Length: 253
Image (cartoon, rainbow, N blue to C red):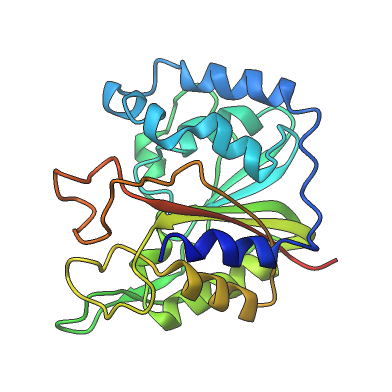
């Protein structure tokens, strides 16, 4: 299956124009400074080698003067990099389940201009269900340059993913980038407890294209040959070394 995915993506990107990657140096310096900040814990910095934030953000075309939304930021691993980078010349918004950042990042250097949005998102899960439903009408911002979501697509049911894709599309400016990374699941494999935090990359492409996006590019930055795609991503033998797909989509101009 892994051999088929690159071939499929090459076909999808054959006629796509790649986001310009020049003039990244100033942004790269700010990313490196944020990565070296004292506010990051040892556990967070230990993941740099695996998550490769500098290369990942370069691939997605981040610039320090952009307006950026990060969806479902969790404990703020990427927030601690993105917010300081964007503080002076850009804008950083954290949306959907981002309320905990108020306490974890409040008062920290570089975080005085962080905006928490989409706090009205509603979450639910039926008894016995493995995935979360979500209702949300809008992120509350418009014409942003990039919407990021890192390893969160897997959290939601089909309806929840559809809602997230829609609000991301609506928030982006024409030509804006939807940047999505998640753990790889075998193609068309039935949902189980072991794979519930993985996503079929072909399904993700299908759903995001259906939301109106264009496929721009993919990266093998987070490809891991030794992940057999069999185990829950938190299992000790694979945690921190899962195979992840890294996709760049664009809102049509």
